[in-house]
Image 1 (tube, one colour):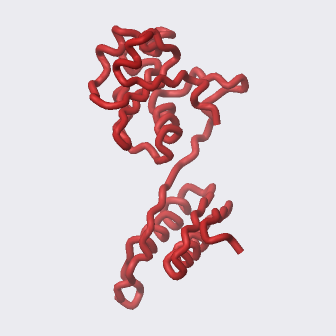
Image 2 (image 1 turned 180 degrees about the vertical axis):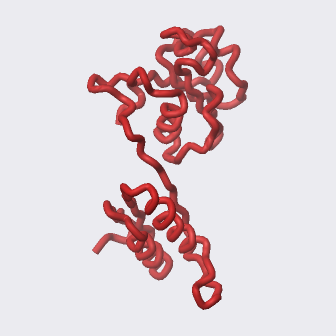
Length: 194
């Protein structure tokens, strides 16, 4: 039996029965179990598993036309990439796109899936802090170090935000200005180790 605040793992999610059971236990007994489901078949994951969990949490109309109340709660649907982002030595692979790395940075920083467009160094605002990523091409400079290093010139063209700014970049050349500007610097790829 899983503890009331335990974690349930189902590596063959299929129809989402495990998630449904966990949500029902939580609703019936006031517990706070969490679940991780893994489904390798993309069609089953999106058309069966995801849809069932969505209906169970929000409510639905059954086959008899009866309104079934949702069990509440929330869940997050994430996709794994086909290829790893990092090579064997822990560096970001050369063929990783900005959007791929943006998704990973956002997840590492927030624990949530990224739903933005990944068309700006400012990935978004989360819980009062702005999350930025400086990575090849986002500032339209395709040279090896182009826009990857946080310099005064790069900082000056970033979208403005008054609060805490979490900036992922290859290096930081701002010195004391970083602290004055409420910058939390995180060096890529090292800050992204999992």
